Each structure stands twice: as C-alpha cells, then as structure tokens.
Amino acid sequence: MPTYDYLCQGCGYSFEKFQSITEKVMRKCPECGKNRLRRLIGSGAGVIFKGNGFYQTDYRSESYKNAAKADKEKSTPAKSKSETTQSAGGDKKAAKSQTSD
Image (cartoon, rainbow, N blue to C red; front, top):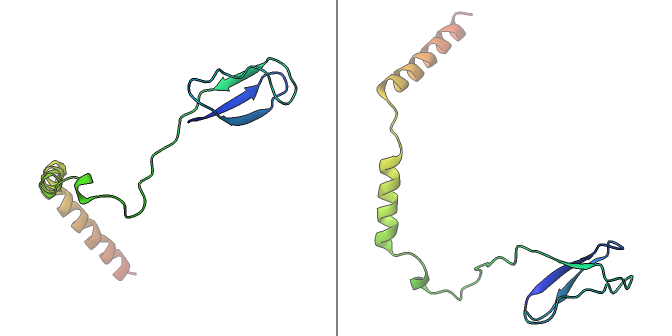
C-alpha cells in the first residue's frame, strides 16, 4: 500500500496517510475539519539495492562489460600532436623564466 501526502488549503496542515490505492481520497482535514484537503502528487520511493541478496545473473555479463569498455575507449579522443608539443614548450618557457631570476 502506498503512502500519500495531503495538504489542507484551509489551515496549511500537511501529513502522510498510508492507504490502499482503491481507498477514496480524503477531503476533510483532521486538524481544522474543513473540506479543503488535497492529495499531493509525489515522486514515489526509489529502489535501493543493498545487501548480499542479489544473484550474479542480475548484473550484466562480462562480454557486455568488455564491449562497453572497448566502445568507450574508441570514443575518447586522443591528444593531437600539436597539443602535446604546446604543453611541453610551455613547461620549458616556465623553467627558463624561473632560472633567469
């Protein structure tokens, strides 16, 4: 059964209600008694996989992981020759300026 959030538009009282999906939406505020209660739309609960209760077959196969890794390596651009010479030349200039002082 899901938990729903409610907000009273009359008094501002908010609360959570654990109720069945088929149960009618509440309209009367338990705090002020007015019929100004609205059920809010929530994002729901996330699934968290913790612990040791999962099987090895629940995860991707080794062949899939290897193919994905190879594809990622192909899509990563390598440094061009001009980039490597520029960075090396910049280091030499910095070294010269430090020694000349």
